[in-house]
Structure formats: structure tokens, C-alpha cells
Length: 334
Image 1 (cartoon, rainbow, N blue to C red):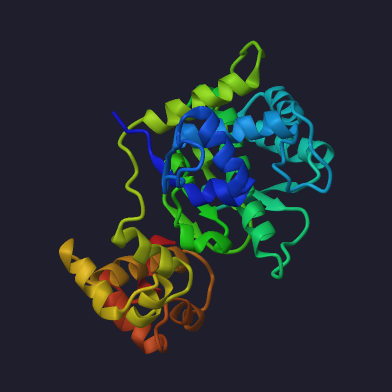
Image 2: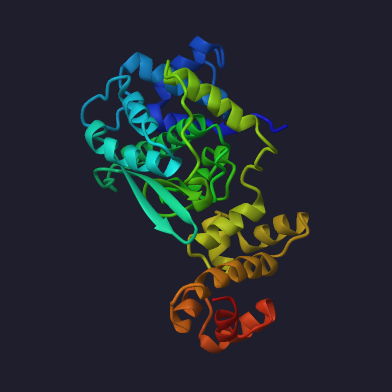
């Protein structure tokens, strides 16, 4: 049985502001008035605070929209999606309905190799000069994506474990804790949040559930998701190195800088788990190489994407880790 996870309180503060967090914590008994805010918060309490902030402000956008989005707007999206026959149809209905109902975010779909990607992104590009507003929108997109995922789980009665999850680069310093509730690897780049659903799940039928109060179903589904299976480890050193590699770091020095530590500290922390940067980097590059060789990308471009100096280095790396030259691997597993 999994355990209810926790999230850094800074996530909630970025979304609704520290003053509102202090108010909600005092009202709910999480922290007494005037006391320092706890650094971490149970995911369930995070969700309750989000719901209470919507009730107090009558704004489902948590202040990210130009004008308040009244309560019940999200329910309209869920009701529209529920008229579909399958998960794939529900995703299309969601993206279409969002254009009419939501003014602050854009829902878009894209097909990839064995997946369908749902992306939740700001309608208006973030303003670099307003870091607080940019962080609020980034957290909001993650929350929006999780709510949509809970709705789809509720509609289909399936776990719908994502293949991959992406969050905004803006929240790199916060790790991937909030999105880890989805139970899939999290990487960060770009804007907004994205969930990759397996193509096999797209034919899942929408169940004939009687629609009552979606907010209650949403929260119950969220808690069930948190408790399902083994808890996802929060920001292990191995996971953080992989995330840094995903985000474009190639060398040990670049990864250490991205994680805000020295190379010596990185080596020491990895050694405590019997790991080395070389092994993790090889693991990541091997998986990435397989993905890129499944495309038509030129070998020179693949070498550059992997941080290798040239095609010769790429061929040597492929033989060491795949047992085949890149061209041989492509022809055999095309």
C-alpha cells in the first residue's frame, strides 16, 4: 500500500500567496496563527487548501486569469468530456471545450510514438519580469493537469498510469514533487505541464456514471491515486541527476551546477547509494539513444543531442552499450 506523499509548502505559497497559506493553515489547524509555516505539507492537505482558496475567492483560476473564473467552470469541461465514448474522445472533447470555458490555459493534444500527449499551458506567455506570476501559473498548470487526470480516471474507472509527465522549467528548483503524485517519471522543460497517455488506454470506455458533485469525486479519486501502489520516491539523487540530464546538462560539472552543489558533493551523495555519475549518464544516454535511433534524425545530430563529440564517439558508445553500431541497430529494430 502506498503512502500519502508530501509536497513543499512553497508550491502552495507560489499558487495562492503566503498570507492566504497562513490563514488556511491556521483555520485548518495545520499551523497556529503566528507560528512559522511547516516546510512540508501532506498532498491531501495541499488539495484541501486549493479547494478552500477557490471557495473563498470564487475563482477557479487562483488569480491566474485576467478575470475570476467562477466555481463550476471546470465541471462543465468534465461534463463535456464525459459525453465521449472512449478516453481518446474525452481528451478531444476536453481540449475543444477548454477553448470556450477557460480563458487562462490552453489544452492541446499531440500524437507520438505509442502515446497521446495532453498539454496544459498558459494562454498568455509568462512575463520573465514577473517571476511570482510566472511561478503561480506554472504551479497552476500542474494542478490543472492533475485535476484533469483525476477526472479521466473517474470517468474510465482505470488507473491510467501515465507513460511520462513533464512540468515547467520555471519550477526546476522545486523538483517534481507535485507531479510525482501521478506515479510516472517527471522531467522539466518549457512551459506548462504535459501528461503522456499510452495508446492502449485511448480506447478505454467512458463509464455511465451518474454525474453528481464532481468536486467530491475529484478529491476521492486524488486520494485513491496517492494511496495506490508503492509511493514514488521524492527527488532521489539518482532521479535528480536523470532530470538534469533530461534538461540538457551533459557533463558532471553541468549536472552538479544544475543541482546547486559542487562536483565533490555530487560524487559523495551518489556514492552513498553505490552510484556513479558515469553509470547514470550511460544509463540515460543509452535509453535516449534507443529513442533517437527510432527516428530519422541524422547520426551527427544524435551525437550532439547526447553530448558526444562526433559520430565516431557515437558509434563507440553504441557498440559499448547496445552491442551494435547505430546503423545496425536501426536496421535490426526499425
